[in-house]
Length: 214
Image (cartoon, rainbow, N blue to C red):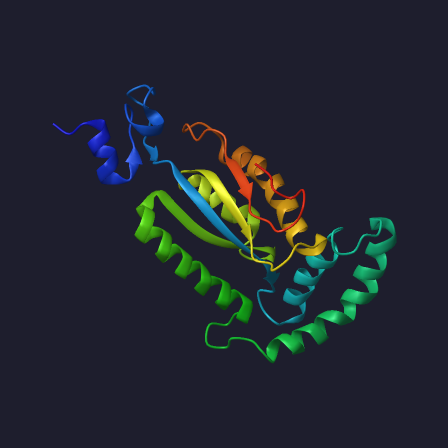
């Protein structure tokens, strides 16, 4: 007879009587085993080089108060009506000069994905499936919110949030952490807690004073 613990180890899921469901009723559906998530975070990238893709990206980036610290009533009218009517054309042309045409994506997305794969391979060799590695962008896709939700759905109860900036600055590390530490609550509210997910804990790795959070 297979025990709940053995069944959990074989399937990668916790069943009633084991792991996260040690005290759950027998009819509780299985949930992913508890894991630790690692998120590598970069600045961002547009989805494409056309006008509307560039406009969405630039609007998100330039609307961030950590980037442009003006009141919305003063900044948004010139941004939306003047700057974003012309800037996407110039930025799109610049991106086309460096675009990864083979994968149809920006070089930053390609490089960040490759970095993530290398980190994942190293951590998997040391910790097996207990650690899950992914990457997110502060602006554009994959968004921080979507990645945190995906990690939580996969069973990650703790997340190490790692901005990939060489030094602290308000428009880089600070805004990435601001967004991340708003996201866990939103992710939990969206995913619900009916499957015993518990509270998601996130910690940031930073290089600036006062920016380490738990």
